[in-house]
Length: 136
Image (cartoon, rainbow, N blue to C red; front, side):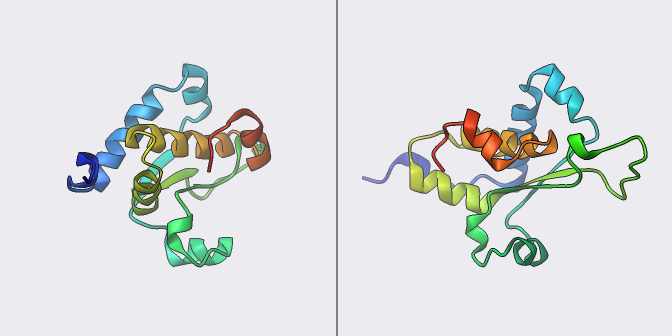
């Protein structure tokens, strides 16, 4: 029998935006303050330029991306051309969620968002893995 969650229509980009907003609003106030000006964007997939730059051939391999200058590298002299952006990619997140089957979609969206926000705060992937036991 197919689980009911797999027979419903896939959540839309707007649904993902709502989940991301809820996750962001539930971050500790100090984290939200450190992320002032951060834009959160949801797309079905990373664009070709992002994938090429990262050396990724399969767009399903990228669930999220931080784009910009980490807070730890900014100075008063920094003149950003655009805001820092956290990208969430709906189709790869949905694919991981369906394959895993052991976590709620809202929790997975929150996890990807927090991972990318950690990059905004200057954390490396190794730093994140040291405190996050999430199985990738």
